[in-house]
Each structure stands twice: as structure tokens, then as C-alpha cells.
Image 1 (cartoon, one colour):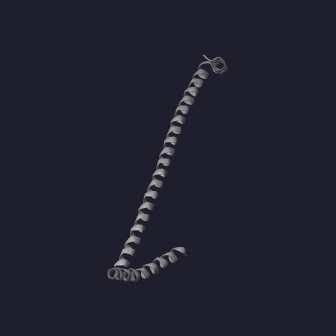
Image 2: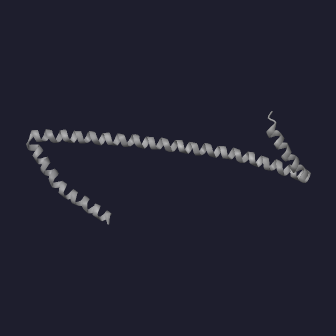
Length: 122
């Protein structure tokens, strides 16, 4: 519903603006003061367009920098998780090695060794 209405509105605006623009152009050719007024208005409008484009570009640059930082943080978290995963794998491997070698007694010694190491820092 909104799209056809917007298209129709833009078509009406284009249809109305063409004869108005032609009339303004014709009058500007005849009247120098009117021509100067229109040129001044066009320069101001051009300045506003340039200002808006620059503002938009700065805003997009800030958004892009924020995205880059977020990606870098995600990569850092991924690296940290990979390191933690490797530590866990090593601990599991050590646990499996001890459990194969000594059975239940080896597991209990392994746990005692860990608690002793944790309470007695080097």
C-alpha cells in the first residue's frame, strides 16, 4: 500500500516540477536579479548537500571502526577459548594416562596432588 502511494507521489512531483523548472529557467534568463537569487539559493543548497554527505561519511566511518573493534574482540575471545580448550585437553589426557596406569588409586593420587599444588604455591 505504501510503496504504490510513494511511487505515485514521486511521479506527480516529477510531473509538476518539470514545467516549474522550465519556467524558472526561462525567467532567470530574462531577469538578472532573479538569476542571482536562484544561483545564491542553489549554492546554499549545494553546501548543505556537501555538509550532509560529509556528516554521513563520518558517521559511517565511526560505525565501521566500531565493527572492526568488535571483530577484533571476538577474535581475541576465540584465541583465549582455544588456549583454554588446549589446557583442558592436556588435563584430560593426563587424567586418562594416570587412570590407565594406576586405576582408582592413581586417580585419587592425582586429585590429592592437584589440591596439594593448589594450596602450596611455588
